[in-house]
Amino acid sequence: MHVSDPRRSDVALAAAVDHLRLAGVPDPRVDAELLLAHVLGVSRGRAQALALVGASLTDAQAPVFRDLVLRRGGREPLQHLTGTAGFRGLELRVGPGVFVPRPETEVLVEHALALLPAGECRVVDLGTGSGAIALSIAVERPRARVVGVERSADALRWTLENARRTGAANARIVRGDLASAVPEWDGSVDVVVSNPPYVPDGMVPRDPEVQRFDPAAALFGGPDGLDPMRAVVATAERLLRSGGGLAVEHGELQGAEVRALLGPAWGGAATHPDLTGRDRVTTARLR
Ligand SMILES: C[S@@+](CC[C@H](N)C(=O)[O-])C[C@H]1O[C@@H](n2cnc3c(N)ncnc32)[C@H](O)[C@@H]1O
Image 1 (cartoon, rainbow, N blue to C red):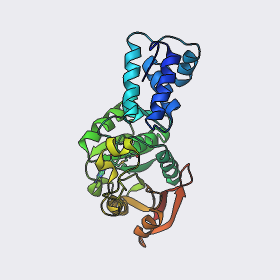
Image 2 (image 1 turned 45 degrees about the vertical axis):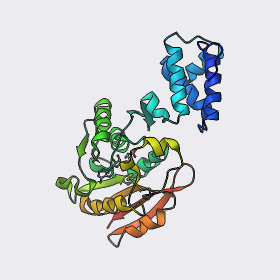
Image 3 (image 1 turned 180 degrees about the horizontal axis):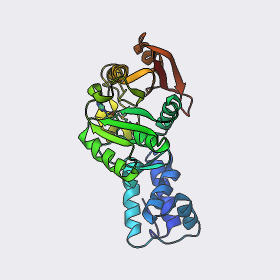
Image 4 (image 1 turned 180 degrees about the vertical axis):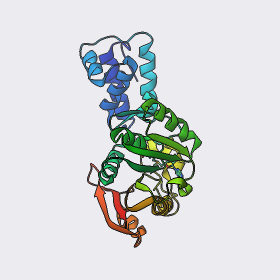
């Protein structure tokens, strides 16, 4: 990165955009502005305004910004660099060891909420990662009691911090395998929701951020990618009450396979698109 006056925010921002574009970052301007905002401790809009008038970075801020831009050019996820990921109004802490929540999973939450009865109810999120799904449902439905289940100790560090920061008293995080999760709620749960690992073993994710920084335990799901999904369906059959709902996220080409995994115990199976029109979520109700 060549910057004539590294302390002028407009100059630094232009150099950052050029660097990220050359590095193949998909949204170089957005990421550069968000990193500038992070370093300045202001909103993205405010950072844009400060750059427009050529405001100066301090001597301390300029090298921090340059370092973050270089790391983003090395394809570290933006959310690891800022330490946060936005999800349905929550600001979640994320970093190495935990899956960065994705915008398409906000759609999964929408479907899970649509399956919930009004009033008091029970929800289980299998493979909760950062806690994105469990915590947003707990916040958006204060009368729901929500349990998030996570097996990875590395991920759980982030889940517990997010649960504490969110402060939702109706959310509980438990460590364990989703196959044996929450036995005390057998037959009484209203909605089971999950975004399990679903990438077939051996497939190399296209984006370097995913390939190099998302934990393998969050991505890979056996030869066809659907081993965790089979466990999710079996656990949902154990946990749900009759008429309870299941909402799962999967790969864009896996909708038919996921519906086929749901045997005669299930009714009304349907696959729904994400915001880009790709099949992403399947829902069904236990008969
Ligand atoms: C794709 S990530 C989803 C994380 C989060 N729910 C989200 O949507 O952002 C899958 C998560 O499931 C967890 N996981 C994988 N296998 C599991 C198992 N058998 N039991 C519990 N958690 C599991 C992984 O550690 C990871 O956090």
